[in-house]
Image 1 (cartoon, rainbow, N blue to C red):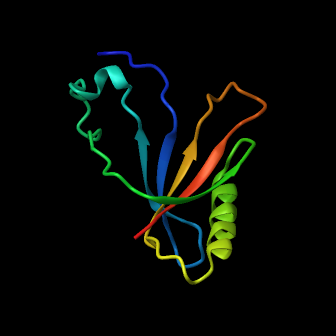
Image 2: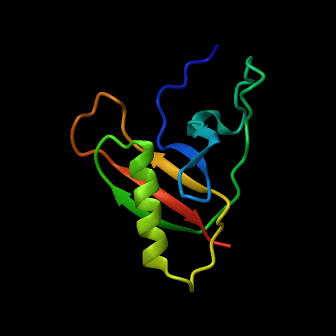
Length: 117
């Protein structure tokens, strides 16, 4: 019952299939605004969970436009190629982040994050 407004980024945890595409299982995460973080309102929908993200180090790439699944898969592949075989990061998932409201037509920011092991 509490309106918290739009937060950024909207983060989608993608679990890649062997061909690099998304598996059907994804997790969407929204940042709780600062004023609610010490005492967040309790969700009334049982499918919504409050999680605390631990500190992490990431490898990241950024791109513009209205991001679709194919864009995230493409930029994840580019990031993987740029990192080569020496970088140690989680291979079982990666994070797809969007920073802009749907109504923003230009100057959009999207990122792919690999979490360092």
